[in-house]
Length: 288
Image 1 (cartoon, rainbow, N blue to C red):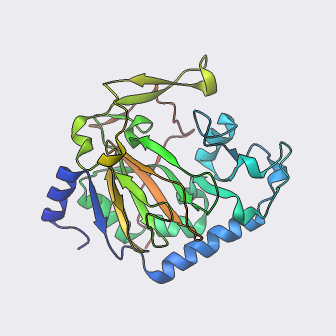
Image 2 (spheres, rainbow, N blue to C red):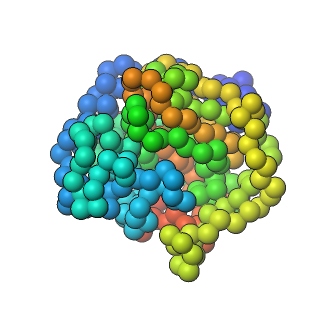
Image 3 (cartoon, one colour):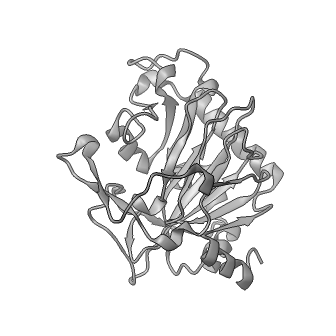
């Protein structure tokens, strides 16, 4: 049993849960090696839109490239390391930011890992009747790459009525304060959702932020670091406020993350969400 009733009560109270040894060391190494092979095989000049800029409102140069990636396994590079026509200014493995956002469906290795008995047991234990996968992402978190993620709530983008988003973030390497581990505000999910990202063709990047509540300036002292060992799964409520900081070490902090939502008839994925997958979101399967 991955989690018990005591774990569920802790998750509901704190907004997060740590599950050590969710992935084996062999699995962690295999996923890292496969991700590196995907990057090595990709030629950025075939699609120079593959740039990620942390200073932009939506963190990337091309909104179209991002939205298309919901039905692909697309690769994103730090924008300062690549020219406008897709030529790299350094080695790709020193510049890659992430792969997303449908690895769980379009890459056979990540698909098998995602749609496993173990994942099914965990998600069903969390109470999902018809778990849908909204997106999957592979994070490299390389030294020197601009990779700080500002404080946010995942339900801001992955919004359902009623709320049902949760993230499962799996550390494939040890995550520490030095190499950019996750930071959270425990119990912050009890304050509810503070904003939504809506589809708005007239707005910049086709999206608009709607405030749902008072969003205070985040006090860094409220955040606590989640330093975890490789193989640990971090489960987070979609309303939990979290962030990650720049990797100041000499080592990467690679991780694989998924967003789940409830697809049962009791829930509805909002039609005005900016994040829309053509064809709809697929259900978690059991391929083992």
